[in-house]
Length: 195
Image (cartoon, one colour):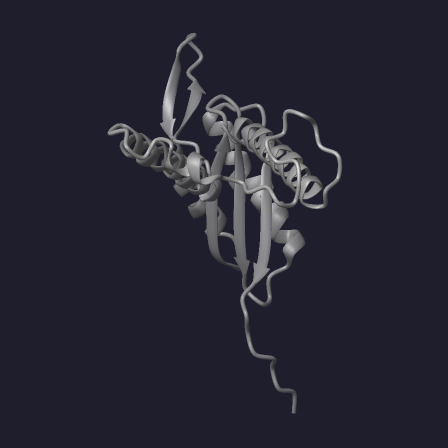
């Protein structure tokens, strides 16, 4: 989903940028009285973008304003949907687990996240853990955010995370690999006074 979303974003942003550059460049060329193509509606700095006849052309038609409002409403709804999709993190709802008999069982993504969080939180020096599953049902990925106590060793914590919590998750789900992105932060604390 995220790869498709990135491609759609790039295509839409590229098209919008191209249209804005071409339209803005043509309007600027006409405003500066530079040569413009013969089909371009504005050919000089004295031309207006929308003439009085053009503004009043459809005013008396009964269908005009409902259509304009409906089209603008659809454009606004699509823009809001696109904006909301940008901020949504795609979490994996379920993981397919091989049962060994040619069938596959479905494991809830939240359940696997909860087990990973519990295993990681049980490690020495870990104050808080947040786990998110992403990727595909057959090839999940994990993002782990660890909040470490001031005395914790980041290297030891990462080693314990990969050899214990992630190894347990891999073996219990039968996954050959479970790519993980781990982010470590330390708990904010006051410096100790030395006498």
